[in-house]
Structures are given as C-alpha cells and as structure tokens.
Length: 380
Image (cartoon, rainbow, N blue to C red; front, side):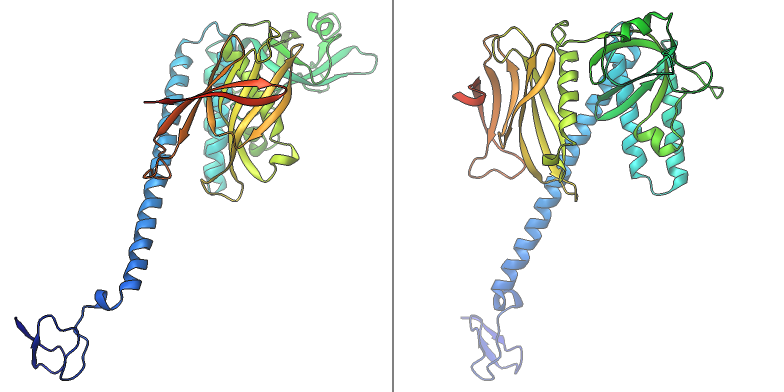
C-alpha cells in the first residue's frame, strides 16, 4: 500500500486514508468533500448549455424559414406579372419586413433610415407594374359622400402577412373622391362597410417620386400606411368563386387576424403557423383551419398555447366555428370527404424538449361542430 504525506502535518499516511490519523486533516479533494454542491453546479451548467442549444436551434430554424420565405418572395418578385394576389402578398410582406425592422432600432436616426428604405423599396416594386394593380383583396372600411352625394370617399383595408394597409380616395378639398359619373361610384352603390371585395386601381406618385401616403408621422406610415388610390374597379368577393387555394388561405388568415384583437387573446402574441382550406361540412364551399401558436407579450420563446381555429364558409363569409386549444398537431390537407389529415409529434423517453421524435398521422373529422380524431397511425 503506497504512502503519501499528510497535507497538514506532513507525516506519512496511507494513500487511501480519508483523514490523517495524526492530525485529523481531511485528505479528500474539494469535489469529494462537496458532492452535493458539485451536483448542483453540474445541473446548472447542463441547463445553461441546453437552454443555449434550444435557443440557437429555434433561432436557426426561424432564420432558415424566414430565408426560405424571403427567397420565395424575391423569386416571385421577379416573375409575378399576372397573379395579382401574389403582387399584393409581396407588397404586404415588404411593408411587414420594415415594420419589424423599425421596432428594433434604438434611435430616431436609425428609424428614419428604415422609413426611407421602406418607401424606396415599396415604390420600386409597384413601379414595375406602372403603379397599377388588379383584383387585390380587402374589406371596405369606409363609404362616405359629400353633401348631395356628388363625390364618394372610399377606404378599403387589407391585413395580410400580419401587416394592415389602408387604400383610400382621401377626403381632401380638391381633385379627390370618386365622381357620380365614374363606374366605381355605381359599383359601390350596393356594397356595404365590412364587405369583402376585389378592388383594382392605381397608386398615386407624389412629387418626391414615392407613393402618396397620408400618414403624418413616420411611425404611422410604417405601422398602418394609408395609400391614396385611384380606384378603377371594385366588386364583391366570395371565397367560392376562385378555386385557387393560395388566395383562399389569404382570406382565412385575414379572418384569423381579426380574432387577435379579441379579449381572449389580449395577453398573448399569436400567429398563424399553418393554414389549410377545403370543404369540412360537405356543403360544396371552402372552409379553413388555422393552426396557431401564442407566446407571452412579456417576451420569451415559450409557447403558452397552440391549437386550431376553424372557420366555416357561410354564403361566402367566413365565420369562426370553434377554437380548439392545445390541439397539438399540424393540419396538412382536407380531403374531398371533409377528413383532415394532420401530423402529430410526440416525445420519446429520451427526447430533448426541442425535438420530439415520434411521428403519427391523424385523421380528424368535424362532427357536430367538434373535432374528433378518427384514426392515429404511427409513421416510421
């Protein structure tokens, strides 16, 4: 048996001795003497590393998704010349991009730089089409006339990609408004505020070679721009008259965005993660499902709530049927018989919080105004 010197009295003692038999000095290392504290330190380090990993994972995932979306938008930016709703979607995406950037700036100089960039890119994009657009989708928010109804003042709003934009004739003293002899005047005669419409027209260019926008402040122009428009056509819109699912999804998302101002969502920041459209109740009309998630307004990435918001098409108007909270699966498509195909991710015993590994396919149906799971099929 080997001998070593005592740390205190320097007398020879056994290498395996925990305490010196001569002076009573504890011979164990600091870690051996404080095992409980070492365990706590290891746990703290592990939690710190794990939190950092998850944060980077989700940040990378989000950035990757945004880059993929940006790539799609930029490619469409170059090729969109006939699909008018794509033009509208891109325009809203451009405005939303600068809305997000404006919030993050820390002083007025930086914010003005963002404002100027937003104005420049918005004009550049629309100028490719000579400031003309056709069949954009919105909702009439104002129908007013002057005394005697000689001129009509009209405002149409859209809320796509999380960005609300107003389009208006503007109630100004000279040269504004839609005259009685204009076709649009007669088209609006049988429409009403709150009605969903297709609208076409031309943006107006101001003397600074920018889009004529009525907000008094930069902040107003960024967060809720109000563009002056020469309307050339406006007509009622119903979700059934177009078979294009992309446009239908835009309308469903717009309906969901209106819910975000409701009392039940005021403590959370919610967004649509996925949208599917199809006939849920076999009436031949397109309905919609929004798969959404919410985080706290106080900050952080933790998801407080996720679920489905189901909208039913009632003669061209989407009405909220139900909100199924904590329905933790992602809808993929709606079959012709109304069956919803959904993907469910569950955690295995050794899975990290970020990465559930067990995948299942669900078949869900809308039965008696409730969502019922008919089948759960494991996926390899």
